[in-house]
Image (cartoon, rainbow, N blue to C red; front, top):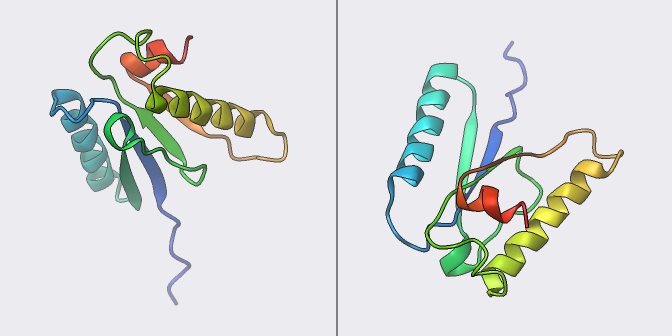
Length: 119
């Protein structure tokens, strides 16, 4: 008898690179791919183009990786994508502060997004 399938770990990658190809996103994809192969665990990842398409993930993911990006994190403060990203961050904080949500959301901020989360 085969046991129940293990639920995949879901990773959301928030791309803040403004549509520009870069080594950071390539490395994030590669690290996730290598980890998936080595661990043998089911892993699903989905990318969200935050700055160009104004895309953001919902709360259904287990891990969130918010990338670096070009420009000054302070100068975009009133752009639509920045406002939406900050609302997404507030939603994640609210999720984690809710005692009824036992499974907390882990977020890894890289460079640009690390600076943004401080404002």
